[in-house]
Image (cartoon, rainbow, N blue to C red; front, side, top):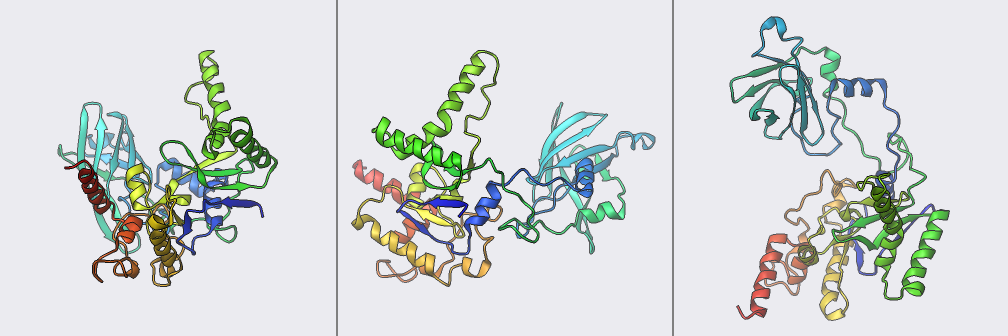
Length: 386
């Protein structure tokens, strides 16, 4: 095997449709293959990237050139407004009459740009186009100004309705991503440091040395160290000290990344989603249907933990949970949302107050977070005699 995964014994797999390859190919890949001529041309004119397949509809596409109604007709072309748009709706606008302005457009077709004289709000006017969907044709501003999209060629207009981008789940047809040979470790960070709970490591000379050095630090050189401390020490200490020393001498910026080049930090939920209670108290990602696994930190005794372990295991092997029918993309970052639990086994069970209500174990595992917060706060008040 090229990669090996380490998972703590308090982690339970919840989505057997999700592959480890999909995580590796998303976070250990090189920056990307060279852009095609079409992609370079689209980037040059500011056309937003095609959406990821399965992603919710995002904000309207307002990238491109716009003619300002406040400019005289004979000057509109040379004063055209150029807008560049990021997938999240962030905007960068530039024109000779105002210089540059930053802002954003939202899914409800509202937009705002921050000019030198202050922020200006507006609305995106779209027209129905059978061939191209909702096509943004006009930006109407609250001060009365109107920007009309410069007439585009059929090819340019068609480019705004390109096929969605399929994410790389494994190498093969439609996935030309290549792994970065310098990335040997995928690890999560949970707000207070790198986590030693769940991680993935590639077979390499660097990995062998890293594991040996971390094991030696934790169990021979500094026996008070835990695994997490040893991992942080060997991934960050030398680089952090070097960056600080270099900055003091004026040779390096303190903004330099102190993380070892061979490691890549991935979002916590990809390898290490917590149960709802621990996610609340530790202020980190809780398990959401579609996540690969769930972790129960601080679960050390059978009396307090077996019920949640059994419930999580039942979910993991259940055939009626959403992942069984919605495929491997459920839980991917562009679809991931905390919301009502859809698994039928969430409610009822031997310890539930009624068939229509979740048990305490189900609430701890799945939430929802506001309910867990209310129960937690009530218990805290009772312990304080309030």
